[in-house]
Length: 339
Image 1: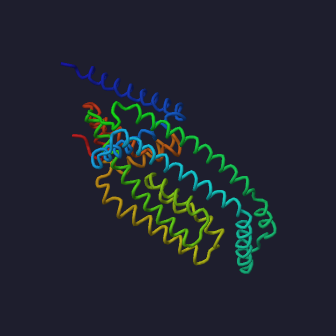
Image 2: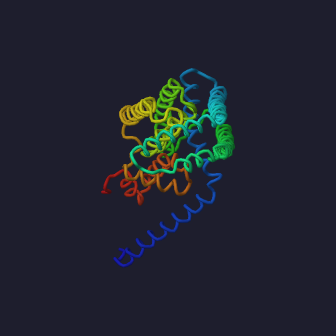
Image 3: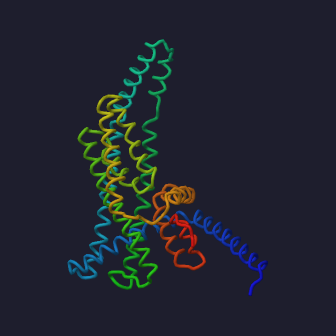
């Protein structure tokens, strides 16, 4: 029988060691993020591709090697298409940057004239001169460098995925560990639903933007697709991103408010009414935990951490739920008081 003093000592020792271990692991994640981020993204894509290959093998009777090859080709074509259309979209916007600058000047001049008509003194000449000197081309050039970095990381992700698939013992990978199976099933369902709903949102937004001839329509559609993976704040950012371009093209005219209203309506309908029906209980995480994980992984891995925060936290929760001593923590992450 352990006396109370020894029990408290063991308990405090366990808590202190857990805090130290968490700090060390967090530091390691920050230090190795250049390699870990593409690897973790590749692992999540791998869960989807593995399910795709298994489905082709079972339902369509594809040979195992052909199912794996088709899965890899689908992934590579998707990435190549995104990169191609993004580069073309940005290039077209850069070529028309001077036109947008003139639209901005005209709208600003009109706005300043309206302000002056109400007796408010504004130095119009200084403001107009400042707008004329804006280094728009340099901003887009810097964006091009960021895009090149994204392409490089994408290439690394594709390589990781190919090696994961080729390194499997079977051409159509399977797992026998129940915990791993549960993690893969939950993450795969979450990612599959998010991909389908985000793709539907992006496609509808792209159609709306193309109908109103908004520049960078494909790029904004892609942003809607990607930002929908960031919980809570992603959809807000996605709606706000096109507003500067809408302002440059239409000012504060009717088209500006119509397009903005349609984007908000589509994002709200799919994200808040349709998606929850397919996700059900989702990843079994409390909303406060979702926000906390978003903040934590954003601090550790930046923007990629925000995208990966929910599936990573859900995977950690599943592992914690399988260990007796950490099961109460898993219950807290789900918003339930431990028994």
